[in-house]
Image (tube, rainbow, N blue to C red; front, side):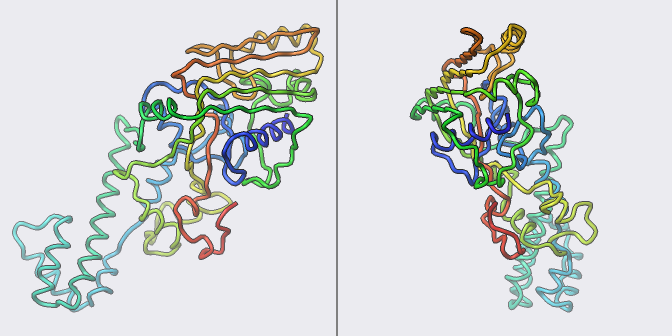
Length: 378
């Protein structure tokens, strides 16, 4: 099954406008619920380093959670202001601001400092105000992110929603994937994982890839004719109301304190490290289809028991898209002299997320990985 899945991955790359440097297939692919939060749930994922991502078999972190943990570990210490304006000016500033009634809010301090400094120390007015803005901005962001924890927790918003996606699909071109396992290479060494492909299902949802019926299916010559009534690449953009790419970029490119707190619960390696970092990758876009019609055949000879098992499991969803029966989806398994024919159809208005384009965090942030002695891409 691993070899068949690799060959299928290459067929998708050949048939759709996508790239081996980013493409990840997603299974299973149930129809999206008609809600923004359902769509955002597919975007708010830190994908594993695998050419196939089975969301039922492989646990994954939420992008928002890992991003928020990094932001909470950052700081702009008072020493940064002292360095910018000098210790003597800093002491004067503290005496001045303590004497104000009422005390200005943190968001007002940059402007208060600028006006005071322009009157007394104009040479450091811009530098000091800039540091105070950085402090106020980071602390405001940290407070905002805490509000997402609830109770009840808030979903992390992304730009665009269900209606926009359906509108795009209505105006998207159709596509076709033709696959013959005997005529398609299984070499995936040039992909973004270097060939790593793990955690995928067998012939039906929940089937182990080493299941005897699955192995028999995969060892035969397998063909797929998939008609995609509409195919679109949906960009994934976190809402700037909570997502600050500049702060995350700073955290990624600088391992020291600051910007990291001197004794954080989370440090750079825990966030971005190659071995155990939880935020090594992010989803740049989703591969979405609508009006799917798929016919799969295998020339393997299936026993009556195999045939009965496949028919019983077909409703759960079948390889390669694993779309469960219901909500406008049908699955049918037929046999002719023991040879298998699987047919799956999905009605209009039922988008299916079949894959994603995955970027390493350096490329996602548009930063310089080479400054850290790391490759800029997989």
